[in-house]
Image 1 (cartoon, rainbow, N blue to C red):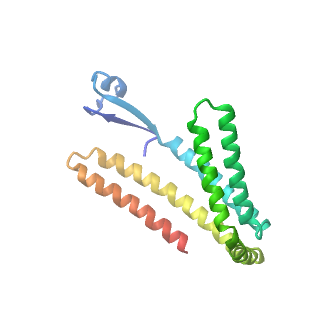
Image 2 (cartoon, helix red, strand yellow):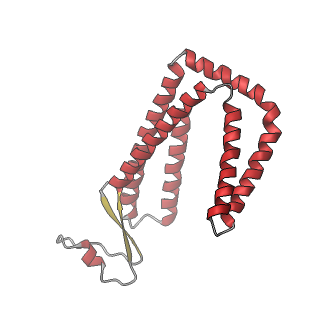
Image 3 (cartoon, rainbow, N blue to C red):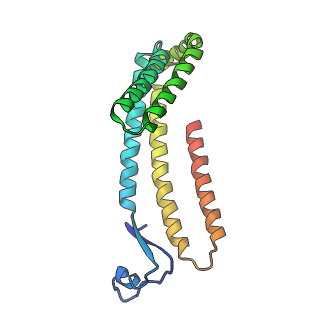
Amino acid sequence: LQSDDIIVTGLYEQPKSDGGDVGGDLAGHGDERISYIDYVNVIQLICVASGYASFSSIFALGFMMMLSRNLLQAILIFTVVVCLSWSVLGLALSNNFFIPAIGILALAISACYTWVVWDRIPFAATNLSVALKGMRGTLDIPLLGVCNLVATFAWTICWICAFFGASDYLWNEEELSNDWMVAVVIFFFFSYYWTTQVIKGV
């Protein structure tokens, strides 16, 4: 797994073995497009995104515990207010009618949904409140959730390193056809999905 790998679409020529400039060797072909992938930056981006997602999940869980009984009503009202603000700001600031039209459509859908399910909220809110009170009574469930997040994050990093490393190695194999590459990619994604579901089910 190299930090800077070269992907060439079009005619490809192996770089010279005398340590010459790869870009100079490939620049002579006019129909080639060269793009550089820095895997270090990709992994750093994944780490930042995973940390942000973990913090958001923990913050959302704490917010749900504080407003366990009125959470569903607050979410529905917040959705309607956001859609209304989107529509008003779109009409006031945008010259294109598409933006406020989408806001008005989202406002209509959210308002209709709120009106339809409002009578059913007390039953669902009671079930949610009982579940959250059980989570507040013991720290085992939140701790298990955090452990699942850490395990999923570690598995994602390992899978990405394995996927790009295997792709780089197999891409240069002349005997390997495109059909086999597609099969390898499908199995890689299946392994990621399967392992993620196993981690969630622990």
